[in-house]
Amino acid sequence: MRIYEVKVRLLEKILGTQVPEEEMKKMSAAQRRRGRSKEESPDSMKTIFYRHEGRPCLRGYQLKGWFKEVASQFPEKLGLKRYATTRPVRSAIDQWLFIRPNIIFFTRDGEIIQAPDGELARPMRAQTRAGERTFITVSEYIEPPAEFAFEVHVLDSCPITDKVLRELLEHGKYLGILRWRTAGFGTFEVIDFRRR
Image (cartoon, rainbow, N blue to C red):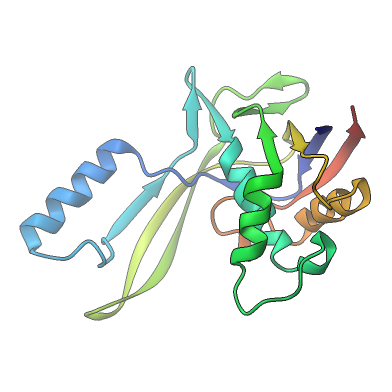
């Protein structure tokens, strides 16, 4: 097993993705009252960060999902041919690459961030059976300067080399992590990368 220590710095705000439990209950109740299916979008929605001991954090699976998304763009770097679907790449990442720890705190000036910096509200559009709907999404955010550190554990049999892993991580400058990443949120730069 090869272990890499990675530390990154946010370039843009990162938005929470978790729907609070009370919000889920409220949405479910509203859907039952209106007779809407779960596929239809609500009028508004809020997303937050996962919390551990009350502090906002990332979960390891969120970073693993990001690696799957990025690696899907470069299957040849993983020794895989380009396929019509991304299933082989995603499956390979599931089997070869592991993120530790499972709870990853955000830090600023060397201290764990205790609470999100604020909330960002924006209109969103969704296609439903009733046609296009517009609703408001409010997401907690953490803004730069902020950092987070994690380890990437890679099986020795995996074709991901030190260089390929670093290249995948460098893609964080262009494709962020978590919510609304295609709009540039959650982008980051690698500030420390070393093999243990």
